[in-house]
Image 1 (cartoon, rainbow, N blue to C red):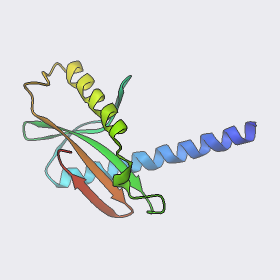
Image 2: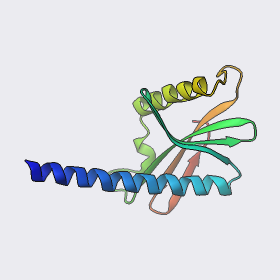
Image 3: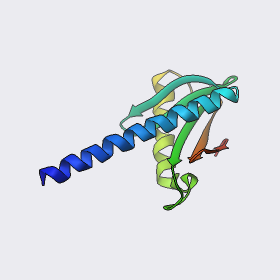
Length: 125
C-alpha cells in the first residue's frame, strides 16, 4: 500500500510540474500577443485561475490545458462546464479581493489549449 501511495505522489508531482511548464509556455505566448502579466496560479476556496493578464484596461483570466498527445482527447476538450464554473467563481473572488467591481470593470475569460507544440487561443469563451 505504501509503495502505491509513493507512486501516486510521484505521478502527481510530475503532473503538477508539467502543468506549471504548460502555464509558463502559455504565459510567454500571451506576452508575445501583447497581453501584460499580472499573476499566476491564483487560488482560493472556490477554485483556481491559471493566469491573470491584462489586455489594455481589460482583465484577462486564462485557463490553460495541455496534452502531449491526443490519445485521450485534445486539450480543448478538458475545459468542461463544471471547470468553467469553478474558474468563474475564482474570478469573482479575485475581483473582490483586489477591490474591483465586477459590474464596472471589463474582463474576459480566455482559454489556451496546448496540444504538443500547437497553441490554440480562444478569447472570451
